[in-house]
Amino acid sequence: MVVARDYKSFTEVRDGLKGTIGFVPTMGALHEGHLSLIRRAREENDHVIVSIFVNPTQFLEGEDLDKYPRREEADRKICELAGVDLLYMPTTDQIYEEDELCIGAPKIRGYILEGAKRPGHFDGMLQVVMKLLNLSRADRAYFGKKDAQQLALIEQMVRNYFMKTEIVPCEIVRDADGLALSSRNLYLSDEERRRALSLSRALKKAGKLIQGGERKSEVIRSVMTGVLEPEVTKLEYVAIVNRKFQPLEEVVPGETIILVAAWVGKTRLIDNLWV
Ligand code: AMP
Image (cartoon, rainbow, N blue to C red):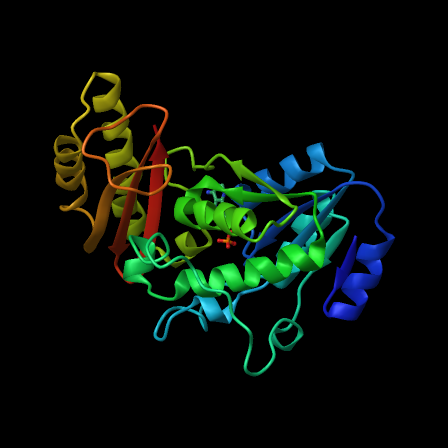
């Protein structure tokens, strides 16, 4: 595995990789969720590129940019063991210059739910993902369904800008007790972790209701709220939308995503269920 830290050395190694490229962009503090993407990329391509870059433009003022977990050495070993060919860990100046040309998230889909709670987050996310997709010139790029709205916006960007990379959605990886893996879980105390389980529990309950024939979003949302409110510090939203992120009054199996965002202590968590 080659570790590159600047554009020039990254591009030199990238140019030498013949055959298909699978790419997994991350912000590091790698866990089994990231690894599942890397393994899939390994299976489906001749070479795998991973990037680790805590992208400042997708963090809002007052968010956790400075304290976001950084575990370079461990991450590098994980990538090496997973058979990654090229690991890109650029410094910020290798990605951005002053007075950047920016693309923006769509005005509606980019500013609801996560985009409403974190306005501008998706502009920064799309900006860096476009750069990384162009840099890697990957045949396929792997993204987790855990960040469902992010995934939908990246798919839209690739469509709207006629980009060539195939976007591959990957299943959410959970701990045995149901908690969706996230680098931010490292912030949780034992007690907070226990309370954080209410997110997956509420989603599971929603899944059971739907299996039992319930379709009304309002009923499902209120049952979920009942599970979440006693546990979380602040419930930001429970939303039931279609694959285009339009709100649904009734669940349509095969076309629905149920999303939840909540604060547990000082940690903001998201989770979702594709129905
Ligand atoms: P991050 O490092 O948080 O930016 O995540 C990098 C990629 O890993 C994104 O495509 C995420 O959606 C994906 N990811 C994060 N957590 C999980 C998980 N628990 N299961 C599957 N994919 C995940």
